[in-house]
Image (tube, rainbow, N blue to C red; front, side, top):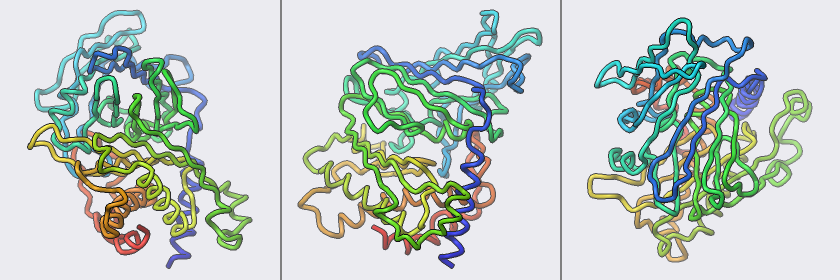
Length: 392
């Protein structure tokens, strides 16, 4: 059974690699700007690329949508409620009339004339209001003035109606911030900290929405290269199969941590636990289906009694670990506390294999407007529980 699963994952990972960005053209640029250290607003500008090679109709009425459902999640979040100052322009520079389709819905109609072409969509999001309004800390983007910003792609990036259903639809993400602020993109991480401005390319909207952005002077950054020769014996792979399919045999691993509880939280210890969790999973699956991965961890004091923390989430090339405030992970922790903490990390890293890359019916393509109906949650969450627990 393990041999079959390993072989299947190898083939599946290969199919993912072959379906990566094929088109030499970028369909749109998503530009996120944060340049005022006293502001809690981020600004997003979506610039659509217009040329004869792009088969994407931007003439006439368009539908702009903000997600309400989180990939891998099972609930709704009204992210459209936090979109402010929404505007759209045509390629001729004219403003396009925008109307919200429904008070209760996440859609806007962009009334672009048939003889005009949609060029840009712009809006702002107040991250303080965002965090205050979303009671589950794991689903909210956040800001701490002068210190830290974290954004979840699906909570801030809207899309035009057809975009979420197209597999090969390259999008560029550009982040512009203060020159002295480090930035980390899970979409396209760098082995050294990048300051001020950085960018990355997503193969489609899902890939963009399932990524995160971290920046600020209080962001703790660690990079570690995990190579195959430190993990796998020579006989663990069919070498011919590796050469034919260009199997990934090394991993750039990143740990991003922001904590408001430095007394109880040992960053070095937590980083080592994260690295070991990943190594154990690589040994278990005997395959590396991605070239980079980020464990992003936040320990944030809840805003009030209504807000909850401690909920984590998996993503294609990352996991967001929201640690319950007051959790003690340091030299005074018990073995059981450490084991439970590391299990949570391993559990969410494991989801990068299942179900992010090997998924059940209704899981993908994902509908960002509605809560997903997943009849096979046992496959996603339960059937691997025992084995993953042993990997902590």
